[in-house]
Image 1 (cartoon, rainbow, N blue to C red):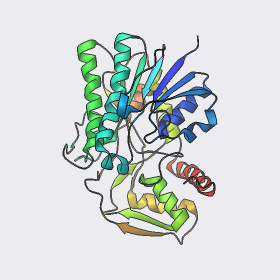
Image 2 (tube, rainbow, N blue to C red; image 1 turned 45 degrees about the vertical axis):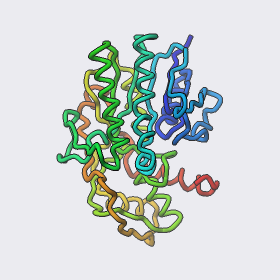
Image 3 (tube, helix red, strand yellow; image 1 turned 45 degrees about the horizontal axis):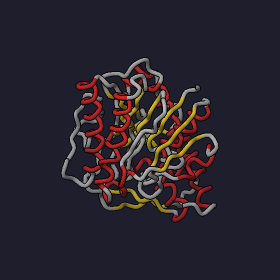
Amino acid sequence: MGVRVLILGGAGFIGSHLAEAYAALGWAVDIVDNLASGRRDNLAGISGMVRLIYKDAATSGWYVPNKRYDVIVQAAGLAATRLFTSRPVEAFWASVWPLEAALRYKRYRHRAVRVIYLSSSEIYGDPDCDIQHESYVGRVNCRGPRSGYDEGKRAGEALVESYQREYGVGCTVLRLFNTFGPRMASDGPVVPTMIRDALTQRLITVNEPGTQTRTLVYVIDTVRAILAAADLAEDPPYSINIGGTETFTVQEIAELVREVMGDPGIRIQRGPAVPEEPLRRRPDIRRAQSVLHWQPQVSVREGIVRTAQWISQQLQEGRL
């Protein structure tokens, strides 16, 4: 029997790219997804190579099929701001339920399985430090508009710690910072939204104050980090930041998008501030470099070029 991976949320943005990577390696790939934010179209290129199991988490929760898996990746979540602010309860549980199912599977059915939890830079909230090391405990408003997603990710990490302490069940936690690329929603996330609006309106909106900082990492590099984490001999007893090495203000990202589009006529305008939007996002990735032997390889410019090509094609085909 060959090696097999289960990707919870595998029809989503990052999950579908990860599914492609594992399929290319010759793994058997199973996906459980409720399609709340994922799309079947994301798997079109590997439709004959993966098994998609639709699961309505709202009525029956998440589960792990009765098979023997070598790796389980919890990639499910409502990461887009428009989703986690309008559906905060679902956003909270999407971070916790699939993870608990994976940890329960490891505890009772297959102790050797590697479980990877895709956490988020959102667990740091609105940091009061310029660079976020994994030891930073964060600054999150549990009653704020982002709390469903932010606290859901934090609850997920607390669940990982609890399973380790009480049952000796390990899990590798990756905190992802501002991953972007093809298949990402283009109605909220910074880079794809700017590209779509530049293509359709020749206009880019930068929410006030415009000096918010972000480090961007192309999705293929994030997938490389997940693959490296799954190859570790054992689960590290700490979380690992995964993000870019170059810091941009949101204004600078808009200017770079306009430059890549090659249209100086694209206007950049100011929009209203987003309530409780983090003003700083810059990961310390030394742990990823030393433990995973990983760092980004695709430049932000090249990533924007590839993303723009995909969005342009989607617009031409009437898919966006």
